[in-house]
Length: 218
Image (cartoon, rainbow, N blue to C red; front, top):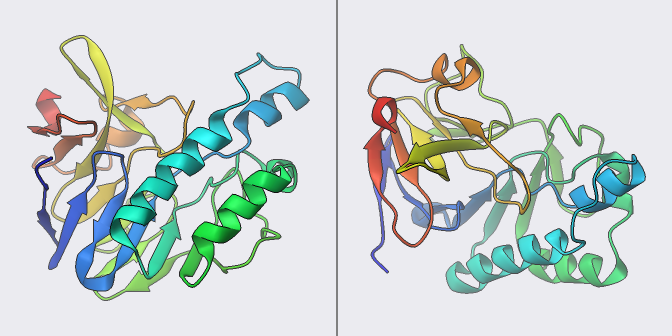
């Protein structure tokens, strides 16, 4: 698989086919919107039932990235859990799995709008995190700093009639796709997204056949 590398605000970054972002120089792996416990949350609130496998699927994909890259720092960009109680409802097996992934790493939980309260898990719990030229937060701010990296919107591009998760990047900000299973997404034409990105923005499709497209054409 060919490695895709982009230059962003002075940092050389790799948008991974999985939807994770890798910063080799900092040994830093970043993922957005895991939404662990979504199936449990929907069942608890009387919503539609989803197959109860999303935690295992999401953790499995994260495990694959960590095994491949051996990061020293992992940033979860908010909405790591589908709501506060979902963090307390993880099975023992999933808690142990997550603990194994976290062991020996600087693990940073960024607060999201679904899980703003401190989590009962180890690691650092922050509203935002700044390292070198980059700043990491859950939701992009219209007046945010150059080098802002965020999640929240679950961006998707429609290509050939198929909606595909994608990274969005312009000269000053990057928005990551949702990493979690069963997370849905927002079309690039949505005003919430389009209003944030500059005219030179690009969409980077995830999946085995990654592609970089002008955002306006995606």
